[in-house]
Amino acid sequence: MRRYGKHTDEDDIRSRPNRKGNRPRTNIRPKHEDAAEGMVLTVDRGRLTCLVEDRVVFAMKARELGRKAAVVGDTVALVGDLSGKKDTLARIVRIADRTSVLRRTADDDDPYERVVVANADQLAVVTALADPEPRPRLIDRCLVAAYDGGLSPLLVLTKSDLASADKLLELYGDLDIPYVVTSREELETGGAADRVREHLAGKVTAFVGHSGVGKTTLVNALVPEDRRRTTGHVNAVTGRGRHTTTSALALPLADSDGGWVVDTPGVRSFGLAHINPSRVINAFPDLVPGTEGCPRACSHDEQDCALDQWVADGHADPARLYSLRRLLATRERREGD
Image 1 (tube, rainbow, N blue to C red):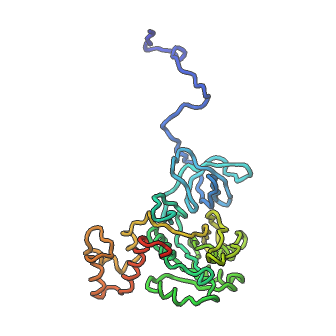
Image 2 (image 1 turned 90 degrees about the vertical axis):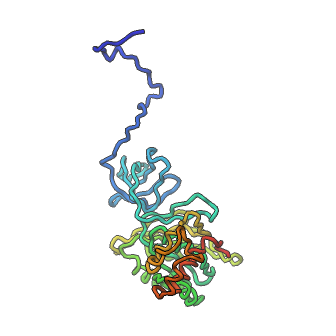
Image 3 (image 1 turned 120 degrees about the vertical axis):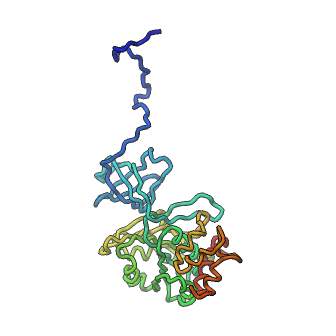
């Protein structure tokens, strides 16, 4: 066996040839300090469309990110070809920390949560007052997901020419949620978009809604230069519309101080398996101080909950406590119940 002395020559050292012809593996990852910052606009089968400065760039996730996935609204770092030219592809090497996350599961028994939108400021819940009929349980679930994810809710009620909004607004009046009521004519003429736009300036707003409620029609009116295919018909038997938006898409609002609209696919269910009920109370700042006397892991809907005494002592409106418990109970009820 040959032994090497102090003055070995590189030619004396045997090395195994690399049959694959690629670089040897290493645990040292590049820092990509020169990576450009961008925003994810949409995701389609693993390919991500990003906005880098004023250019639309197509990219894919770098292998080093592992299972971490980027979603619409994410701020990402990109390297590679950032020209945005046809048939070019960049790589996403980092995903910045998120300020808010809108998540859902397929149903309440599904442990796999899906991140719908990242870094949104508010959630616009679009609901028709008729054709299809409003679904308060679905609205409640969207509100819980918004409060849990750090988004402020906005109610957009459409088709007021077919039914009054009074009953539905009374149900959510104690939550102090801003709202806009529109008619079918306003959706078609653009009048609805003008009033909704007042709530969107300078914010990233995710739009969610049951199929057939006019969500995509409203988005088309808000961003006419990027029109999406609108819903066709509402099924006369089921009262449900047909999905026409198949992937989330972020669209910039003109003359809105940086406002963005994120159109999401129509939902028929909104699972809350991922929700921690203890975080929903944060959306009720007038009730939070009253929880100091609650037992550990209190669900805020049990016999020893301190909120009952807090309200009885006049520190908060009883209707607010009722609203909190109604939202918390949505996780225990099916949307059709």
